[in-house]
Length: 541
Image (cartoon, rainbow, N blue to C red; front, side, top):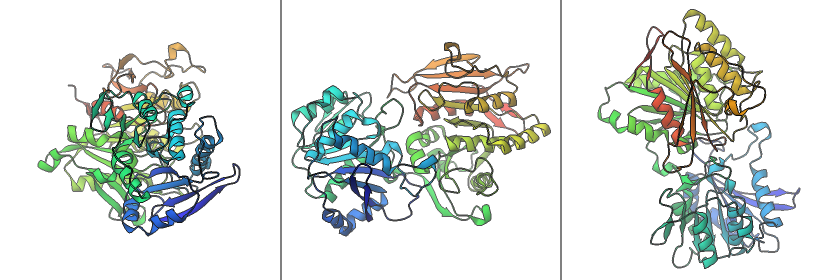
């Protein structure tokens, strides 16, 4: 690990940062923990650097540790006070990326950010979790007390907590916040969503900072995350590197594309495939979002769980630039089309892949890349799962040109399962939006009528621009029983109408991925095969 002092003169504050060793951009998931101490001394942090066992743990688990410096050796937990605002502002500045371009930061996804506090720092951590919970996946609190103004300013959003030496007011508040209705020893949890919990350990907290953070990893940081699927996020279980069952190819040069460029990807091979390696099975390629990683995609999508249950191969590739996919097919960037083609060939040579059942999927920037690959390689792809993306009106033109030329050679059809959240940036979809560019293009490609999208959203447009020919509402996740998913199904003008485009709207979801997104997508994708002559075969249940 290495230590750095970061100063923010615009708010007259500073903080120390401990970074993990190794490359800044990494295929695994970073974990960010903000520790509120009652000290500005660097000496305890320098002692952490001398603790070999702690550094090995922190490096392996990609811990990024922030230590904001208090004023006058204490923190003010007033939810309307300066300290709360300043800590949140330092976190914002730490993650700031102009135009979402790689600006040299240690990027950490919003769902894996945690707070730890000691004394008055514990009180402030409780205030932040209760009153500004949107990027707080959990708190580790030693001592402290709940500020009396917190109940008046709480957002009433669940935040899992481990509270050492907590007073009864703090314990009761966080039990109520997490809707706990079950108890096992010192663990109090919600039976519907056990990721909402409060742990009240007996005895004293670990007496060293290294031991406290190591315990924090074991009981909190590795256990839960905070997906952006409601206004303030929700508590869900986390998948971390310690629990991976992937075959990880890190800096592998064997694919041979892009002049032998080293690539990294995660392969998931379900037990059914290991037991019967010669039986042909489907393959799904899932591409991550911009500035994202295979590790975070595995955590947020939980797609490997579906792969295990349904028996298909799954790959989470890391893009060639390690930041964003070359979805525009720019000549001055790495050729990610060549990379994905090489990856498919590798999977076919390594496993018994059913070549008629290769599916492209992705989130955000990776969703766009998956669509670009399907447009330019329709003979290889049976269907597409596109999660939370849009096409810019003045970009992405090359893929449309290539797709149009191939369409003239053969009248390909491409089934698309598209997902968007009601809190993402282009909701509701209107005429001229990037979503309209994408869905009108796919409808035209699949011989589906392109009805006019209104310039302004109306109740009739249902937030999706054009309502489907068939509309289905459901609540697919028992862990989150109020999360509504509405699918608008569109059918072709063929003699036998085919359901080749679907717009699935997830109520409350921001720019993030839910596990049920993948489950519902697979239930659609699995019906389609791309035959050797280019035709599409549809298998009904």
